[in-house]
Image 1 (tube, rainbow, N blue to C red):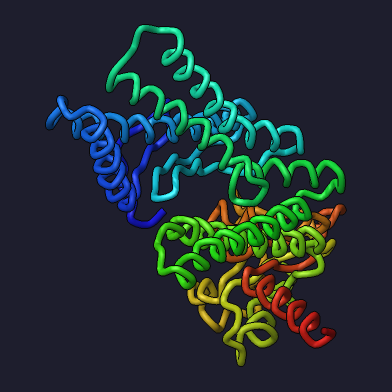
Image 2: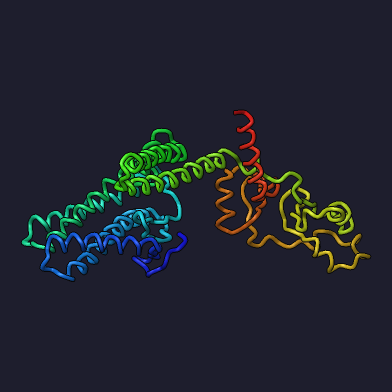
Length: 375
């Protein structure tokens, strides 16, 4: 998240705080400090110190909530890239999604479960121990905060935990994880609009700013839910297409039996699109690559006698992908390995063509234009 500062590691997970967190820390400290000073005048400046301790306790509760998600994700073999505290709470950045609806549900519900457990702990301390005075007020406040944190996050709209629970439920019923995300995102957008309207009505009707937090939270839900829906729709499209359907037409494929003169005449001279080519044997299997620049190592007078095979570079660790895999899998591989292209191979080891990021984008744009024209 942009504007975040790394403050250390928690159980091996990088921990960040966003710049907005410091503003909220100041506001929460001032609010709680003011309330404590009014309730316990004898505290003096100590009230503000207790206000800071309470504010830190609130954020520690948010952090514990995110650690609940993270712990369950780690148990599923999912790497947790970071945890960030920001204006509206916290965010655990997971490496990937869970593989089943049940696992997705367990990750989503873990955060609220931790908050409920903390509520029970603080409530028990307030009720069953001889804590009194300002300390009792702080403990009771932390109990309330954790209960509110759990209940708020259970609102059934993405990106809240309740939205992820709803996503898992729809995924279980339909068997499609992307339908779950889209449905839960739409619910999140609806709730976001409700929050914005509920905050704006008092403002325009009575000039009251009491609903400003409703507007901010509603806007947050609206924006994030919209992005989640778009991402899920894109992933659905990519999962419905195979690599074979997206390989670049007229991919740069040359037979190893060609002489360099033939290679230059038929593939290099007069074209600027390709400077690197995939080399196949007589069976159509990928054996390596050749770049146009490689020909400079051979005198032009010798090109008719030298074959492409002699300049072919072995694949070594050059990755390939099965042509029947989904475009979603292919895009993930391209992103993970920071590649712009990857050769596609069929079940018999034959080279089908070259899959390029640009071609995937063009295919999606063409699909979007077709849908726009149809509507």
